Length: 85
Image (spheres, rainbow, N blue to C red):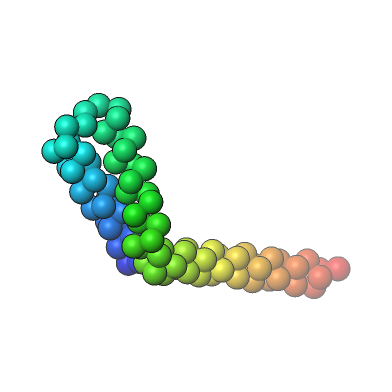
């Protein structure tokens, strides 16, 4: 969960920086938002690659735990059904 918060915070920080720079340069309105999101997305693609890998690993591990719990519950249910028959 820590990596999820870290990645999200860094993405928002990069976005805020580009929005601030765009505003100082004179961009306003929808153009400011479009340029800010596009530029921050491109920069974060390269700058945050390691953090993004940690983020995705954390999410993947979470889903693996959920799948394991589902499988264990299904196995227990199958065992109960088999014992009744």
